[in-house]
Image (tube, rainbow, N blue to C red):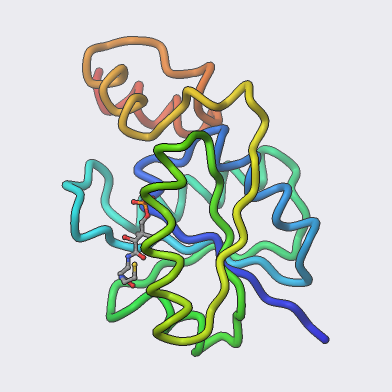
Length: 162
Ligand code: PNS
């Protein structure tokens, strides 16, 4: 059986914590789709196409396996994308109890809607404090985000603030 999983998220921008989860997930499934999805509850910094491009560069920069596809989804439910591509599993990284509380209702709704299960992975604790929102804030105030993001992202954010 060919197992396809999706790692969905805002990725605004992708961090080293995301890369860690993507690498672990790529080892567990035959095909992995990293999917940039609009989160209606968040105000975005980067355009979706830019986020896809940065993830593409970061995946190559990290030398991740070639079973990874990077794309975006902006029409309808996340599970509609899963159905379209034949994916039966969503993968999310869990850093803390706060993440568990945030992710649990979404996982249950996605299972109710389309029978898509969510698998939670525990990332490297070294990245437990890293979030896209923190990266956006540090970058906006002129701080160095290079310890937290792939170099393609650090370079892009640096160029934006110059
Ligand atoms: O990285 P994020 O912002 O925590 O990711 C959340 C995201 C984008 C995966 C979530 O908001 C989502 O699934 N949006 C798509 C809309 C949808 O399908 N909603 C119903 C199920 S939660």
